[in-house]
Length: 270
Image (cartoon, rainbow, N blue to C red; front, side):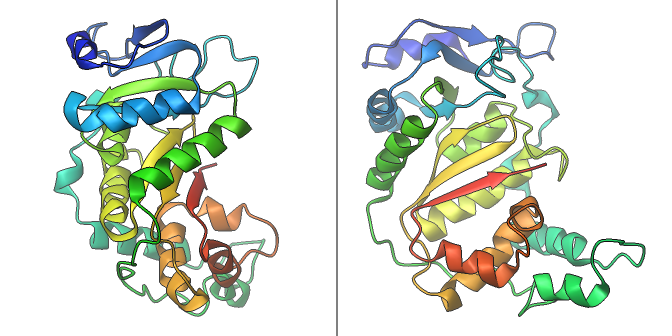
């Protein structure tokens, strides 16, 4: 990110600094970060400017309240040069492949029997249902994003502000070099491609991101369990830990119920 881009921002910024990546010989600076916590209203003002400035605002979470480096952001654990381009990935193929990996039955699994494992992803079992259809928005996507930013900042008041040179939240994840889902897939551009598709189909906006978490507002959530089931299947492919690491027993059907009319989606990778 070119620091000169900050000069296009009309909203006064709090004290902050450019973050240098661990990679790139010290000359790769993927984002700017505030030195202290950021109010949701500041995020909202910068979000309103992003189409003009080309800078996408993120509320940045860290590993803990006592993380002096505010990792991974302040410590530069960001790897933009490792990532491919989101435009090179087919979303349907990606999700189908991840679904297949997540539903493959391991005969040595000592936790679930093959029958119980298939029950987790019922009614689909191992059969990938395909991409969920687009939903009708129930709110303006950018208004919904501001509302969720307020909610997130209230829950995580230590969150800082990040600015990334990107035209969308989906692209910002790759441009920042974030590697939160690395244990699921080590190329963030693949996740950016999926989120970009959700931006179009479900009015999603990227609001906040942590070391291994992603927080999205949703302006077009499913209105029924029937609508939610194929969306839940995409979530399982995208982030299996949302199902496997959830409350037990956690099934796709139970997860789908939680998605109905819910204006935010949160993901966590183990």
